[in-house]
Image (cartoon, rainbow, N blue to C red; front, side, top):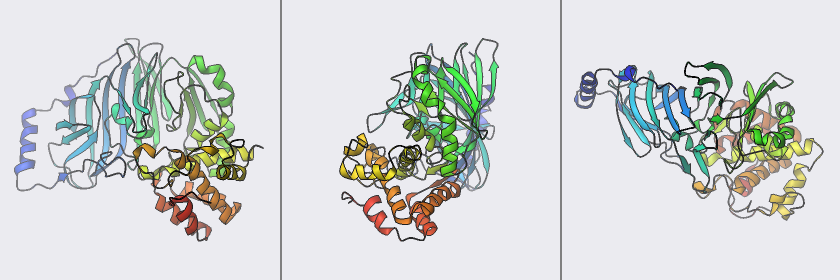
Length: 470
């Protein structure tokens, strides 16, 4: 395993100190500190203000034998204001050096905030490059709902997952879904291990010490919570869909037999989704099946959803695939907008079943109203506990109403406007905000404009109403 040299960060300390002192005490200060947090309704300290990231280049070395991660993050961003300092989100790992625009920068840590002070103030509109060397044994975080996220070890490796804020456990960044960027992630692992990440595998390079570097490229914008790094002994398969989308699956060997049937449907699912929602938004698709018990949930990590063992159903695979349109390409502006991810993905499950001779969306909708578990086993869940567009707290952003009542909101729109206008609305929504961010307010305004219908009652009763809808 190679350890990166830190010499490139060793610009003269005296010069950096003088520049910092001048910036702080001189008469020509142009910048001001960027905000430490974006005031998200549920995660107010997530993300940072004053800049937007264009690109992350992450170079990671990981050895499962000792659990240590050595990383270099090169972050290219654009200043939205004059900056005397800016923050990055990073949990736990030790920072070994920081440079901005090639010059050593001062920095300090407070909790999960890494504050960086460039040698010279950054001007508004300036594109700047920050390099951070860091290392340590990354740890998982426990969400408000009790689930684990972040860097999670397995029997023979690890997986990095980030929803909602776990990505800060394995790389520094602007960790809020409103700041999307392109990624290049290179993961170096010992001989015999696979390393999987988002996008396309550009290179698999043997190193002199016997390790292998896997270089992954994601040109389309990605929210940091959708980034992943998977290390382990996986069986890899590649292919293409009928329309030419590249496929890459990595399956823990013990899960291969149980996963084969569900993963075999992935090419048809990509084609079906393109027909229902518009062109598939990425150049690659796939899946990672983890060793059983690694996670408590599946996650729609961009281009390669991760599953906590064999999926167990085609509908689960379809749900995570649907997120590539809804959640990954069209991403939420804040965590309050999660129903736009989960409501759409759940309704996609209903549509898949309807289009393949199974239960119709109308039958599912009726079953939830009636609590009929013979039609859908989730029909007696607490789907009506709160309005999907207004979860009562961070522990509820993945609650049942966000999924099921969110799907029912979409079906109510379909009932109001008819199939032709509804499916035109869905495809138009995916196209208008492709590779961008959108809020609930964006959706309600777009739905009314595109359908020409007054949907206020749907919003008042189903989307925001506190009482059980009838």
